[in-house]
Length: 485
Image (tube, rainbow, N blue to C red; front, side, top):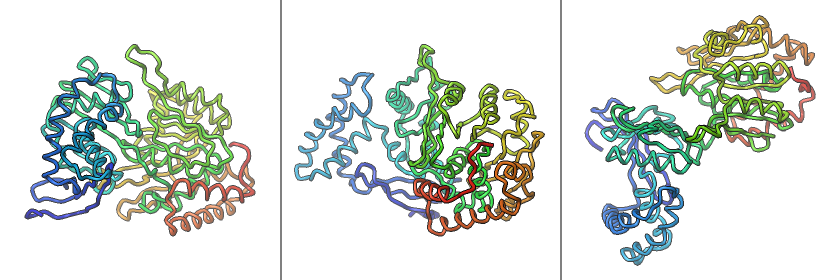
């Protein structure tokens, strides 16, 4: 360690048998902690030999590559030839070592280099290249924005990475089309820009797909939401009340939507619609995921969110999940679906409950306020960008006149989600359709809190295990409603 350096965290990654050490350190001369990677099972001497193999092989062979070839096809094509060169320099290496060295050469010279290592770290949410003059930045799930020791040597290399990503999914980025939205086959979302549109240099922003989805138990353990808040959402989902999750960018809207989906019963058909697949629901659910598609370079073949929403209503859904509501026509169809007995769950960009009502009732969405009563709950997510902490900021019910009534509010000083009002519209609606009295409803909420507590105490955070518990719960619940509200 250097003078004035303090280790915050260390762990290891295994990337195709390449062992990578990760250290996160605080340095006196750095305003943010530094995320450092080092390959621990390849010596410096071996790296020099591998560089010689690269010079001997890659420079010649890459001349034969076609523009249409995918990264995977290129790697498969050259593995055998690289193996012969490795056998010359490492005659005594076993198969496992040979495979690891092949993977290293392919990763560094045909793949995305050290970006491939960053993509394997499940602790990272975002990977960002701003230009070739500064290091890659990452957003760590626990520590927020970190500067890395990964450098992209040239602007042309950044552009090459963008081209490789685009080519693998049928997209292109050129000086005539300097903006690209795409996603990797792993589900990670990618945005790329070329200079001079981005004036400091070429950029790549990768939002990583969560391999392990956030569950409601994760949220409770991380203090994102309280037991009472989670139980209220569970009761709403069980009784087919529609819910919209709102919040700012990166506040955890989709993660909360995924957590709410933990409560879906297995005997109902669920249709989800997203621009990019992010939701991961329990396997036992009757779930059909749909995804939008951008038009091709000729402007044909595009599938918009509205197309999917309209089509989903012909698929006999019991539950409809919408990744994000943006426009009037999308909202019109969704609220019509609520009024005709479907349960709808979606996200919207708005920073608090009051702003949510304003967004829904003003352009560009511009819905009549009276129809908002079809929506039962608004859940607002918030991220503290200084600490990186995500919390449920507010939970509110929607009254018959379209106004919102706050039920729970975050107390940032105590870091708690506090009850500020008891529900009125929800209790009245549930009483009408289930016959449950107010005391019955509160007793049911308490029983749900007990079950959630039991799952937290046993650290049950796997989405499929939670789905199985929910299935057993609903199977034994005689008063679950059969008719949609």
